[in-house]
Image (cartoon, rainbow, N blue to C red):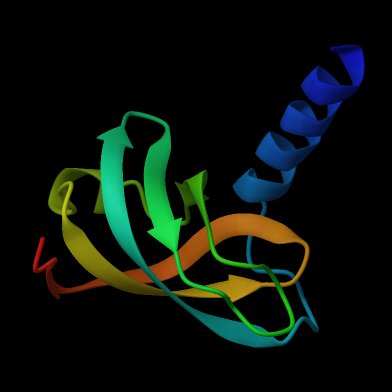
Amino acid sequence: MVAGLALMMAMALMAQAPAPAGKKPLTFHGKVESVSADGITVNGEKVEGWMDAMTMKYKVDDPKVLKTVKPGDKITATVYEGDMSLHKVQVDGKSGK
């Protein structure tokens, strides 16, 4: 439990940092499941070289995103290896579901 809490705190600190210098930007696609004051939960597709497909809560680089995205929105964002936040989030449309 302590290790899990430490991991969550480390992820929160990383998410508050600006885009990592020298890290390769990768394209992230997913469907927004929920929006809260501290991030968005996204059912994300696999990002080659970064993460398998999974549903996870992410911090965002711009708090305005939390007021514009809605559950069901399909999004595209930029991610950086080792950084668990979404950058430059754009809404691509509503899910067909």
